[in-house]
Length: 416
Image (tube, rainbow, N blue to C red; front, side):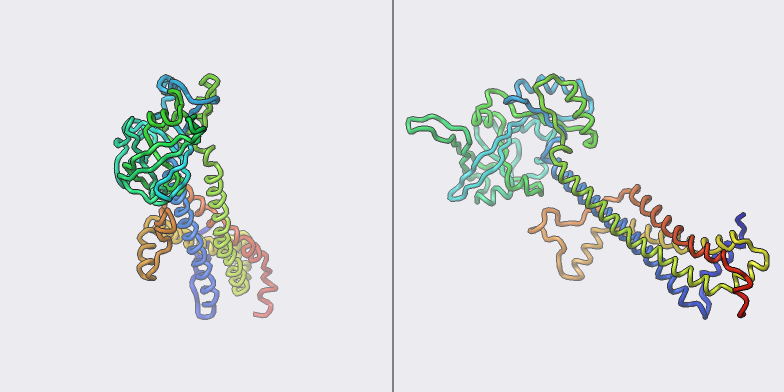
């Protein structure tokens, strides 16, 4: 049965005397190791959560949560499909049609390929955030029949054009002329430039009005598909399954997790491996408690023998050393949790201070599309880290405590 005596003695052994200051020093280093390990784990996982969120938002700012397209050719009568989808699934909060084709662009001597997306400017903001990332111009500048175009910043730089300049679009569709079969070409006026921070879009995407795209690519009144936005992007998979089952044949339903599965799977694997690697720091610090308690047990052989002769049971001796090691681990875990949470919530300020102090930029904006250190603290991650670190600390006390309980009073006091 637990008695205050075990707690008193266990805490007393934590305080150093002149002859065992080295043992207390090892206890302190073990505690500091746990503090650093827990702090590093919480901070790194929070930064990785922030990067994952940043990448996800930038991708989904241009890609839809769910896309419905036709199996054979363009999708006809998208308005009726929109009404039907909204009746089937109330979690759909936005829908917009689009036409997606590939084309070549030329301006002066510059030639490059890009993805062309025909959009309805009045509906596209329901499913896309590109309007929030316009550097010059506005989506409303895309008016039917005027053949205006909005380019990604990287694409505009490759072509060497600015708003007001002309670019020539060359489509894969051919036209029969007296001179023979020639590719279709059309001159567009650049009216806007956007930058979403993803190379995939900034350097290879051009936006035009959906009516201009229909004429140019001859879709015969149809569209490539219907883009949907949900109130909760994490419900994309069940909503996709429900729509695929409810809609008749002839439709292909996909969601963002399928289109970007490899990227987010790689991020998840990297986060898991980082968690395991950094957990080794905590494990090493926790098992330093083993060496600390073994030295304490060796140093306290006579004390243990006297306690046994006074009536202490092996269970009481075991509990004394478990308490000692657990207190070391508990203090280390709590300090590490406080440090990790504080650092995770202020990592941008800390990084900015370090960059100023060192006179360098860790992630230059001209090299990395994400030039800051975003951080998103997940309390379930904090709870998991604290539980694992504390569990390892308690586990590390079992063997030294068991060894102390096996001390024989006669053997320990023979040479005293």
